[in-house]
Length: 111
Length: 115
Image (cartoon, rainbow over all chains, first blue to last red; front, side, top):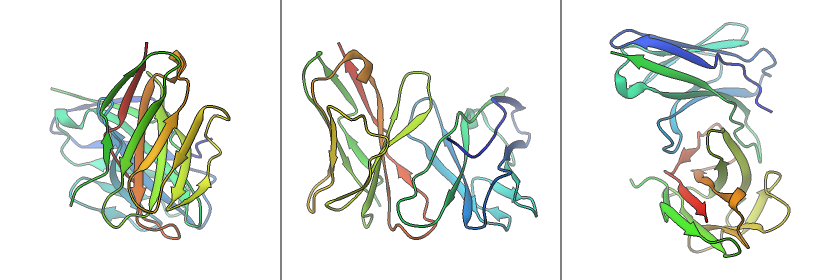
């Protein structure tokens, strides 16, 4: 079972920031937070991951709370092409640890 | 740097036939994962392999499904005697190492249709 909780759907206006929350209240010390998205049945696309510090790359920013029990993925200027299902996953490092996908958040970017 | 390559992109099989799905990981990646996505459902883990070893097959159906990742060549997911319920998108992912935080990189999948 997925160890994360996400809202099933969200809307965002084109050009505005999209803030996608994820709750992972049972996260343990060696578990990283990963974000993926899946656009219209393509393969999941890796976005970003982090342990406890905030992270930023060319796609998004990841804000992790100090207690690490929740995080937020931020798409700073959403476009129509960002419409997708976004998955938040926690995964420990260590041998044989697979990624468990939950139902994710269906983000709709509206014109 | 080529990504994860899966072929074929689409595969149609009649009930009772065999389906073979291939996955070539990214260059330098020695770990392969297979996932299945039924229509309108989420991704479900099937199996995790290293070269010549199955590490975790806890998500594989007990019968008709098998996977391998030989020393040379792509990883193969094999489904024998397919049934309509096997119709799904099958995604392969790869990573470079096991004992670190490397993300998985996914291919664009093989869509299997059983008629």
